[in-house]
Length: 323
Image 1 (cartoon, rainbow, N blue to C red):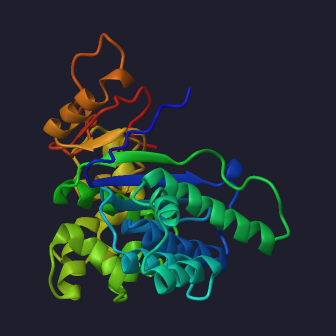
Image 2 (image 1 turned 30 degrees about the vertical axis):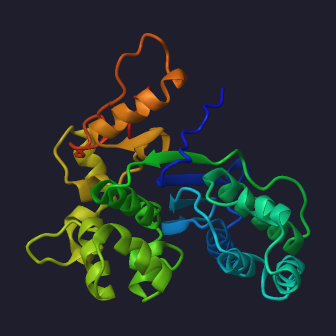
């Protein structure tokens, strides 16, 4: 049975969202498919008022870490700007709003209400993104039918720098776990690589948890989380980056660093319902008390024997914590 996702509309929230291609097919293998999905992702975020913190577009699924602000008042010009970002400057929707402003001095109330309903909402953001990409992909490949295997999954993430940093690193390390690259900077379809290349949107995403500053410093600071460093201080050749060695440590119940652990596929960061401090997990448990059985008394659960001592999740997994 599907579990209702945990969402909050009255406050700004961070969500880790994941969506997979039907039957695990590698329909996103071509660079043109990933480029189209990335373009749509950015346009959809601009329209919905969602901040992209980071992302990783893989061959049969994608991850995106988003910050969704609570609904605020938008001026007519701000609303028009969002519509332009999504539909384009010459689209019918854009022209209709421009004509309203020119003739009666404002956007019609019914248009404003209709558009605002689609904004500042993670479910609408993901739904429309997936629908738009499906239309593009099916048209390009003369295909019809569903593209996505299921509704998207999401984790409610505490908007605290150390928590967001951990989830962001997990996402950016996806191509490393998949054996596609040794350094995520070499994988062009993840947020870290785009930030390292100097792209403003992705730099701002990392700066949202690493702090403002010169972009090389911001990205460099985040890199310390992504990599285990040895005496040489160079990530590219360290033993810790060997995935098999990380798995050996895990299987032997040995100690590992957070950077090493993030190279494992950690189920808690995908299936944990909510992730944050103990206080955050307990607060979410009380907010969503009706989602849990009457026998359950507390919300916070440890992340097994993973080295994330300050993090708690709402859902205790019944299967292995890593894959």
